[in-house]
Amino acid sequence: MLARLRAGELTVDEALEEIRRTQLVELAGQARIDLGRTARRGIPEVVLASGKAPAAAARLIVTLAREQGQGLGSRLSEAHWTAVEQAAGDYEVVRYGPGAALVRRPGFEPDASGGRAGVITAGTSDLPVAEEARMVLEAAGVETRLVSDVGVAGLHRLLEPLIELVAWRADVLVVAAGMDGVLPGVVAGLVDAPVVGLPVSTGYGAGGEGEAALLTMLQSCSTGLSVVNIDNGVGAGAAAALIARRAGAGRRPGRSPGRRTPAVRSRPGTRSRSSS
Image (cartoon, rainbow, N blue to C red; front, side, top):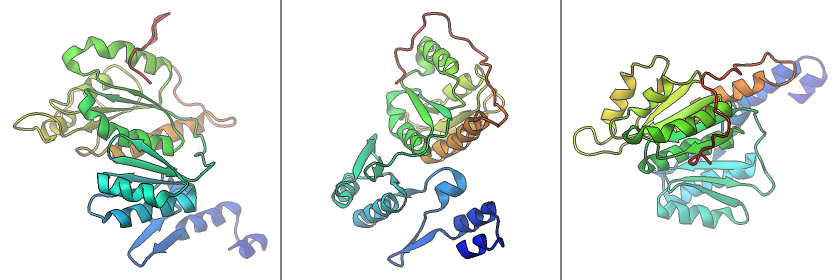
């Protein structure tokens, strides 16, 4: 491929496309790790640990870290965590909540995309799934802020953090909610940034496994609200990362700027007590 590039048979862009298509590494004859996904899509591959033996999941995650600087895993049990920490050696292991892991090769940092994303949860019970989304966003080079416990049972708690996120000019918001799942629709009705609804399987009785939250978000009166599946923090983070990365690229020199006028403006002197 490099010889063809040197000979002028391929352009640089064509060579990059071929590299992206062929960056697959077979591991132990059982799994194919997509090492070209970050270059191709801007978001890294995530290993789903549940259903895999702890040692197998750890091997996949650490192999990704060795080959491309970082390896991501979701739905880790305590046995998976033990296996990952043992396999990681001198690599850094970052915990995102109880079930999401990022293993990073020493000295590695993802390229900054220039994009910004806010992650909002209705309650603290929604944090484990929201942390999956935050992991994917940060691994994709998106600057991320987290606001938690601002559900509609105390709607006044939402306003100041939301004003601050809009003033910060977040390109996209991920909003996680269980129970009645109303919060994403409320947020989508107040801001001009894309909102990704993330239904969570918290609640009581009928609909308590996330079905009520999912149906509420799908039936939201707020137009333009996008919704992922129940507890799919990885999917929400990936969708938000694609939006934020495209917005960040649009602000780079020589590119057309994206949306920059917030629909809600922060009052002088207001500060969020919940964002991080």
